[in-house]
Length: 422
Figure 1 (cartoon, rainbow, N blue to C red):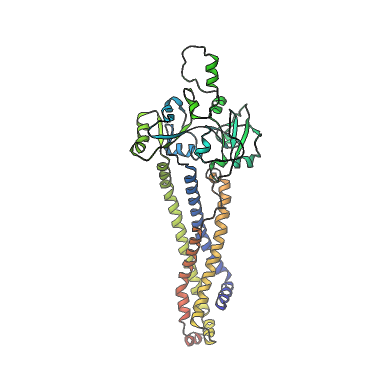
Figure 2: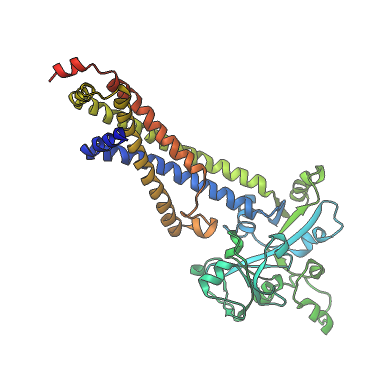
């Protein structure tokens, strides 16, 4: 304990030099921690929200854009596809497809996206209701927990949606108000920030459909009711003359047919098939280089921090030769001297790591609030991971390694020679 106290007093005797070393440690470890926290949260976000979706069917365009839009709701749709183009995928006896979930996108309420779908969304995303019930008719809405909290909505409340995916870009609001029927349990996933409604609500809002000519000008009342009935399941989609934004698919198994299914769709139809797993791997490859570069920068700063601590202790060794010799003459052991210098490096490292911990989490929280990281990817500064401890321990270890040579030289100092210099 006396060696630790001596190390503390020695560090305080040179505040500027000690502060600079602590700052370098904090910057290097903080930068590395920020990169790590973002990577971990992105990985968690992408894996949790994938919801075992094997394939995304959408309009021709960018496969990555299709995946980001229809699974992670972080981009815009590639376009619309007509139900007639994908009707075969709804066949419950399809040899490859086990389940299909249609989606319609394009509207929002205060930038929270409104997703038109069927009642199968609850099972697809493994969601449970905290309050109320699921939607039963057009303009019924089931909202995520964050939507309810931020907008102050509950079952029975009503709200007005708007065209476009961002409130800032919305030039037109819906004349018909949505009625909240249920609120979802918090999941920590993108569903917390979504509003779900029957897919037929989108058709009613935009008055789309009937793009193809029907024979004859008059349709009987029974046919009219059929066309305007609320769609709650895939069975109700048969024969409908409407568009959707995308179709999410799950395969029966990972056989050869399933592996080649997407390629066959792309080669033989007017729609696009995108494999989420493949597209996310491509995204990781695109962002990996930038992430690696920042990690290398963090490592270089860590090395500079180690060099700074080495220089700090080296100067201390030169300045304290007489003090060290007198302590040795007074009975201090070599281990005591070695420990005092080593503890000084440890204290510098621990202070640097502590500042890095505060800096990384605070900076990430503030940065995510001012960018799309929080809204689109649920990245927050209040995320903690056990692997952070390894980063901090590694940083302290670098500081200890930097102190080994000065500590050893201090321990091996010759009392008589050091005293005669003064």
